[in-house]
View 1 (cartoon, one colour):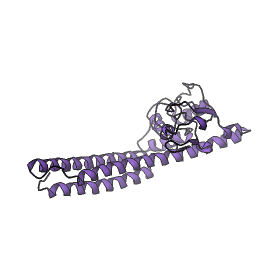
View 2 (cartoon, helix red, strand yellow; view 1 turned 90 degrees about the horizontal axis):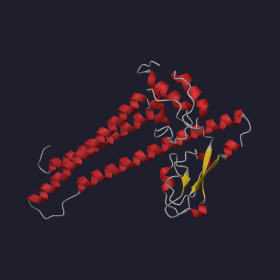
View 3 (cartoon, helix red, strand yellow; view 1 turned 30 degrees about the vertical axis):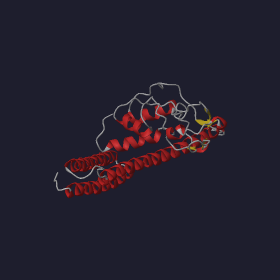
View 4 (tube, rainbow, N blue to C red; view 1 turned 45 degrees about the horizontal axis):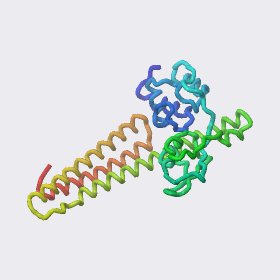
Length: 265
């Protein structure tokens, strides 16, 4: 299927709209959107067990690829269930959940938010005490007709996409804050050694490292902006632009601190 550069973002969005948004990674990609992006450049369309054969057929119509049989057996909608009496509160399942559908805290019992669980199974393997079961989703079992089942799948997909995107934004924000705090510490840090050439050299090295760290942060933000522009994702573009502004401020601060030592880069 021949595509122009302008067609590709539209195709990616159309492919993503057909995927089940379980964010399970069984396709070999870290989420439904990355799989959609891969399909748009030729990845096989039969790698999504939660989507079933019907998803393969819809993707075949979109992409022009042949509707091959699923590479793995189709998977009906599932929900994770924690045997709470056995839970040790390790938080590993919380960290693994791609849609933030597990509540709990360290050393306290965890529980699954049933309506928000996509049945991705990613919480099962990290559990050190094997206290998580996968069960048929009650919302799916309650559907009595094709219309009700289609409505359930549409709701699950919309919520799964929304919560996955929200989690990705939260994790990106936390990572940025950690990087900025490291950079600020490097900028503020002073040698514990007494004055002299060795202490001055140590401070100078630290300040140069802070400049390099800020430059790397700016480089990452610009790469994220370029990706957002390629896929025409306004939210990603806005987030990346904010990161660029923050990185530029940190870089300017780091350079000023370096220059105040009397050495120009």
